Length: 323
Image 1 (spheres, rainbow, N blue to C red):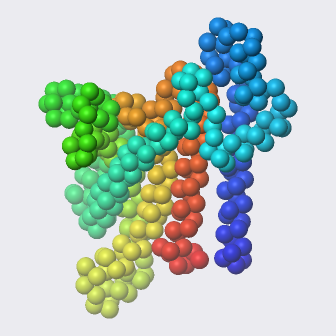
Image 2 (image 1 turned 90 degrees about the vertical axis):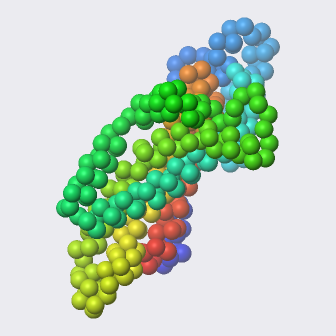
Image 3 (image 1 turned 45 degrees about the vertical axis):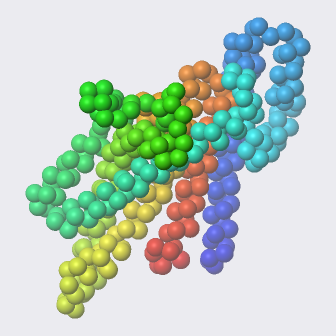
């Protein structure tokens, strides 16, 4: 199969998965029991006049056939138009665009740190396999992997923010203090530290384990023994042959974790009251704001699909054998 045909097949697969996700997101609220107006306007629907109810039904398209509602929903999603939140009296797309950069910043920084630390420690552990350092590091990572995200976040707040008073415990900016320029950057950075540390600690063990076992597999390969038989230094063998081949599975894990970071950041952003997509999702679920909830789920779905697509595009560059 040619590269163009393979790329076309993958594109069709992603389009199919996206349509399935959009269809599920569209149908779930309509299949739920109860008044559909209550899903849009909440308890305030009981205080609406008949004219106001009719206006909401018309604006939401609930007076049209189901297939027409579905076609309109697809068109709106393609235009990044998720409708209107009657509870918060705002366009949902504006709410998403307001929160999305903060989640990208949080997830991106945490993924960068977890990748650097996880790959480095995983490589060191594999290179010193079966030694005390390797065993101790492996058990430490297993212990970190088992930590609940909310518990770790609350522990950091209790110790670092409350007891020591080193860093702020919530939000992204200090309320009531207008800042610009570098003071604003420093203030945002101080608020980012604890959420980033939490996400980094939670994400790092998986990357460490992937790098460790990937390197162990490469170290046992025939071409590594051949490289050593040629008289190459251990440093050359490590960086030119071992790490270069072992990093391919790690790159896949990193790209996938970027997509799932949107969903995984819900707990972290909630604990630290961080104004990202995860916090918006929690607020929508708590307030039963179904249009906002649907929009957040769709953004998370798109992030996962884009991350998987990035893996498919990057993988042949890292491993020419897959082209």
